[in-house]
Length: 150
Image 1: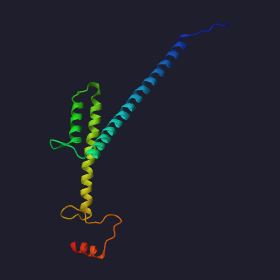
Image 2 (image 1 turned 90 degrees about the vertical axis):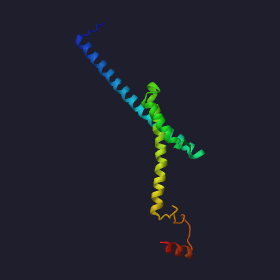
Image 3 (image 1 turned 45 degrees about the horizontal axis):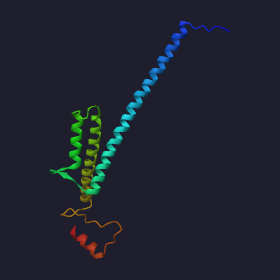
Image 4 (image 1 turned 30 degrees about the vertical axis):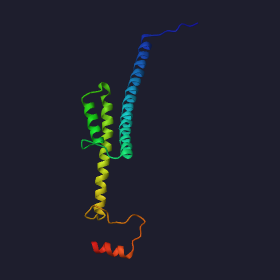
């Protein structure tokens, strides 16, 4: 049986390969942790926005002392997160707060967009759209009345 000879150069090369593999594993772990953090953030923001939307759909607009619930909750959760109220989990408070704020801003945006649409369609003095609903046929009298109003 032949003896196996291992030189110092062989050991040095093996150690270099082990170090290189450990560095690759470390970089992969760091990348996986950052990706997981981004996914968790997106899920938390989306879950908060969905929850606020469900509440709005179920019970309508909720205000506490004149402040819309989603605006108040968003600001409060973000402030708690900024002041590190939950320790290492404070970022999660900010994520849920961002979701509530996103829901609030979506509601405001829908209102602004609706007002812009109403204005572009020729809303009356009361802010009601004079245009007929889709699929509605106007009578000749309705057309004449609409034309006279302009």
